[in-house]
Length: 169
Image (tube, rainbow, N blue to C red; front, side, top):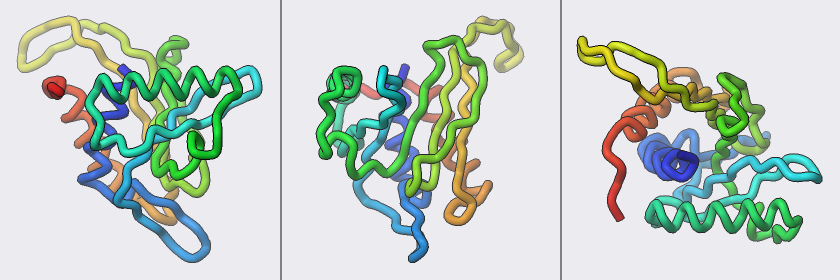
């Protein structure tokens, strides 16, 4: 699920570049490159390794790179290149059974996506009852750079991408 979220977030960021940015006293800097940091819990605390150039990667490539940086993080072997140039962060606590949380932005980034656990409730869809996988996503934005409307447009697009067909390589 995390790999699909990384891919979908990169696509949504390419359409909503205001969230693929940093904020400083000098203003907002948006980036063409989309480099997604993923929050990783380690014995030494939280660290955020970065997957660089996500839009050019296939889903299997994203999965492989994510595994590599998570292993390096937990082994305390991350280099500067592994933690530099992140433009957006995803924090996924779903695997811990967390139903909802708010993530704290990694400054200077302007947004972070919190991903909770996926549940299978019985819901109505198009007038028909069915079991559906549902996860709560929360976007935290720095309102000096991103307003609620911009965040909502990003989340709407992310939802469409996640609920759509899985991209083929």
